[in-house]
Length: 117
Image (cartoon, rainbow, N blue to C red):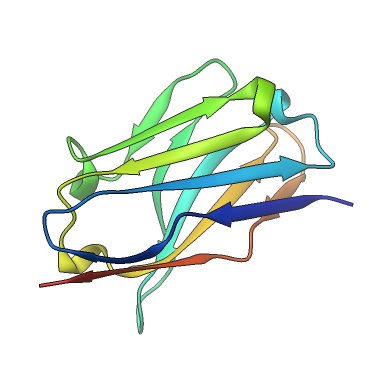
């Protein structure tokens, strides 16, 4: 049974920081590209950041220079360090695991990040 368990969300003031964590079980973590998506009320889910098996990172333009994605394969965990948070970063953040060239894809349950102005 595959599980992705997120933690670290919460309420923070604009300009503050949060670190999200997602720990996976039931998969060979190092085989997967890991990503963080977010969905704000009334908006579509969007990819925020991703990191491949070999550590290549990709970010949506709106978070470049503020967010950092990293992974620890020994702990089966992916992180999203979020700095200089803005109210427009408010959303439910979802962890995603995707294995290239297969249909294998899994989602976490989501963690709410609220940034107050």
